[in-house]
Image (cartoon, helix red, strand yellow):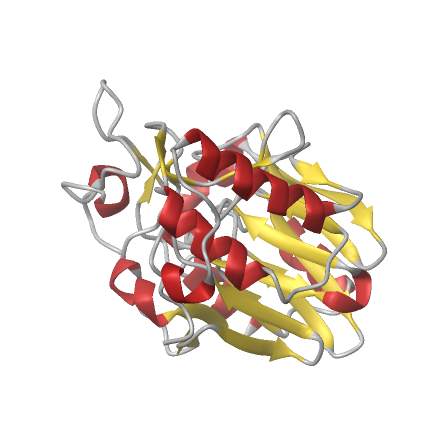
Length: 277
């Protein structure tokens, strides 16, 4: 039986089962997020399923995006990668209804779930239980896990191969464990909002998106250096329409330079950025 704990309507995070809603949402009270002026509000999985549904959209060969309609909480999309080594879900949605389970099972189920950062942890324990697969969370972000589950795997270091040919890379910045997922066979980088594609089809690097607090130039320089060895042509970020479909590696490199120039910095050497030590 899956968790029926209360869900924050602002960020979509689920808490352990209880008779009454939590007094606080840890995610929303963090300065990267916010508590609405009308106060914290809560819903349940049943209420959510009664008013929302998930939709699937083909994005590229082997890649589907999944989003909740109408939009709920932060409004991110998840991605389903169908690889020769198995299926991987990148990031989670709060809504996990029976239709979503049946569709994904019909596509081969899930062999792994990977989370970019805590804002998208949502109902990840439910997803793990429903598909009986491991969930990969960077160890730097373990304190943000609201519903513990034995299937959660905390990985450490700069990278972790999830399945053959699919690797998570920790870039930091937005959260200490903020990560991207690299699928080099298809030239794809999935970014969540570790870096977010902007309306001008460049990329932004923020500590807080809703509160408009950018990352400092040194941190963005470090992110650029960690991305440098990766080969990719397209990049898909957390929201509909926010992707770079051609020459994404060059565009993100230029975006990091633009960000650093705007803050009076520059892309530094690996030693200056604190890497390789």
